[in-house]
Image (tube, rainbow, N blue to C red; front, top):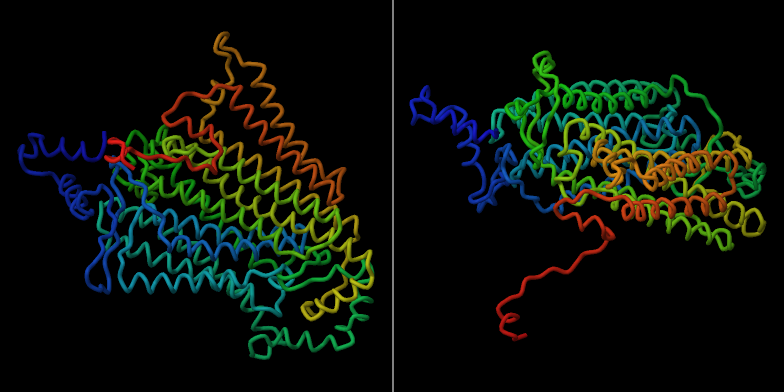
Length: 618
């Protein structure tokens, strides 16, 4: 029974006097009154005069027909910061293809990625007013976000006490969390909506406060190391100037660089986010405490929200303490006893259609990083380089198709609507999948650089010219590279194959979360015998074999060109398997199921005949 039905029943009950409205009915009427006239959703009204402050509003109630709002320009502008973030994160792996690089890559991507998801969750439940205070607050948040993004640097910079980047990153994340806490405090005290909206704010405040403490600890540790360094001169960039000055002009000369980097044709150097090289081997030590804390802050937020969903009451009771996300999510098989033990784990109805659309934009953003990684790199002129370049472009295009072909086109078919278990699985997999996509993109960049180095090493004159052009961007005071050519290419191959295999596994698990295990098994049954069909077994085994093949490919293939071509062929095989499998294995009939049979990038022309068309006039 929906919340509105409960209110109507209480209002007409004998205990209520038959005519006197109940408190639930009053709350419902109050919420409806706060909505825009004639609309089921509580979008903020456009004011005719300038307002200093207007209270936030709940987007919708349980049982309302949900209307997909248009994504505003502010959301797209917000995403631009994450394009830069993904690009800066890619240089962590690019400059340190090691366990340490993976630690910093995940530890720095996780917190900033969570901030994007948290904004989607907030915007899918509440609508902020168009007033001066909220606009100024949004500008402040974007400034903090810009601080975090610009200080995502390679590993040697983040972990060094000579640079303030780890401190600035941690402090920026702490400030972003403080802004989130202020937002939820505003919901708690000023929201126009149901009582559940204020209750859900308590859970969000608890989660954000713990994150704030973790990021503050990371900022204190890194800040103490930076400002406590004896070499710090109190001026911005003092460390970098001191270290550059210590090199001497002879070291920056072409001959000095050639001598320092002679082990691999003088190319394996470290650059500041423009040109790549690979750092030497180093073990994780005490200087990595800040990034471990940042990683812990992201894991805490993920685990906390998953626990919140698992411990919500079932049988519709969650609607009394939650606010919807623009899909009437069906929570089933919940542990009712756990809700009494954790009364603060309460949420608000979620605007799922809006969130699903934003998820699609998020993946497009990450795929865009892959395109940037391929296009913005040193260009070669050899045939091997161009074959690899176009294979990488085709691979990313097919990955884009593979993702959107695998996702439902309508909210009713999405895992977030199906049940809480599928929603939790999708929520976890989308985060791991995001990390894997960025890693795939940077792997293509590393492969292209390997071919560029190979080409330069075969042309000593062009090598010297290129080294002179890039010498001024070298980071000072670094050790000579310690990776041999074979070891470096092996690491590149491991990152490419591992990240691509993880992306495929996450994509299959997301498909499983959308369809469910029972429905997936039912699709594999023969209509006549009701047994698992041989064709279904073949395609399932083929999909698993492709994942295993690409995951182990780097064990016996490390050549950049060969591994890129084989990877492209494997992606084509994945697309063909998905396409042919959908034709061979029957799919249950659903409303608008024909949309799933089309290429996801096609916009079909639709129109209704007007009066002139009906009368034959043009």
